[in-house]
Amino acid sequence: MNSQRVYNFNPGPAVLPLEVLLQFQNDIIDYKGTGVGILETSHRSPEFDEIIGSAEKLLREILDIDDNYGIAFVPGGAHLQFSMVPLNLLSPGKTANYVITDYWSEGALEEAKKFGNTHIAATNKDNGFSKLPSEIKPSADCAYLHFTSNNTIYGTQFHEEPKINPDITLVADCSSDLLYKKIDVKKYGLIYACAQKNLGPAGVSIAIIKKELLGKQSPNIPVLLDYNVYIKNNSLFNTPPVFAIYAVDLMLKWIKKEGGLSVIEKRNKEKAKYIYDALDRNPFYLAKAEKTSRSLMNVTFNLPSKDLEKKFIDEAEKNSLTNLKGHRLTGGIRASIYNAFPIEGAKKLAEFMDDFARMN
Ligand SMILES: *Cc1c(COP(=O)(O)O)cnc(C)c1O
Image (cartoon, rainbow, N blue to C red; front, side, top):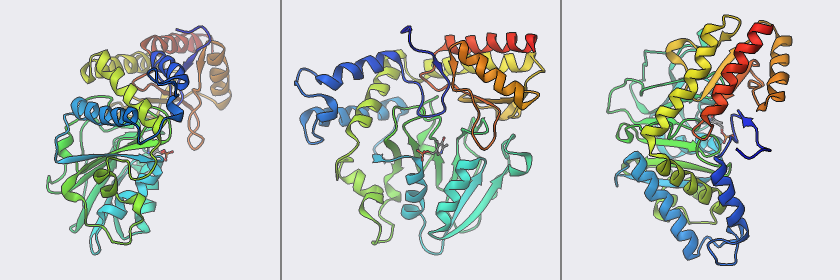
């Protein structure tokens, strides 16, 4: 590791692989010998054509996405997707169904309410979002069922899709876990994710959408909120976030080079195990998520007091373990360990946790 760099547990924007950052450094000055840096490259250039083509091709390859699905690179983050989903998929007279498992799914629901009827098909709010709901009850006239695959703030994760009638269009906010392992895209109508957690820097979101769902939206839909416009124009209707898409392409190349999603998944399990094992062997720490709902991406826990939590964060910082503070809504500790987070960092945190528990 570069000597100035620390183990960064930030939930997003999150750590990127050093080799990818070094490639940025190079390409910002001169992209592939053109004498023009990537930040200055035209979105209509052959260089960018190749980048966006490669990103789409690699994503299709890594997740086995067939031609029944279109891929859109949409500027902005997941909140914009909260609006685009109902705008594109909620037809009049139908009901948008939401599984409420976190602050983010509540945000997605609030946005849908602006555009039509909504229904909460399941929620675990009554257990403080610590154990995921097992029973999902969609309404009769369900336009789609939206769920959040990984609950970034509370640290819970659906390790498989919610069990529902396969005729229902499943929509997933995978902002904090897309590409943490292989998923079966065919089970979904729409998958979206902002890039800045697991896929690259902020500025772009990826949407993978079944083409047959497109074209049913109101003709008054703003042009840049229409998934169809992205699919028909290869995400080049307007100036896309060139750098963010270039960075996502590098991240996809990195995943492939590391050995693909089976290797990435194994590594993610290993990283999470170090930290959860440290939680479980030290009753000093209070895990937030129930065991069966634990996230491999965000590990959340409390210490016996707020003072000890502050001390934990301060001392961790001195040990090059940074950004462990929990979300402002929930407090406590949160270790975000997405794909690019190194195993050594998870191991080091686990050792630090043992030491800290012993001394305090
Ligand atoms: C971070 C996050 C969001 C919000 O993303 P923005 O890009 O800031 O709008 C939404 N959903 C999930 C699951 C997230 O982790």
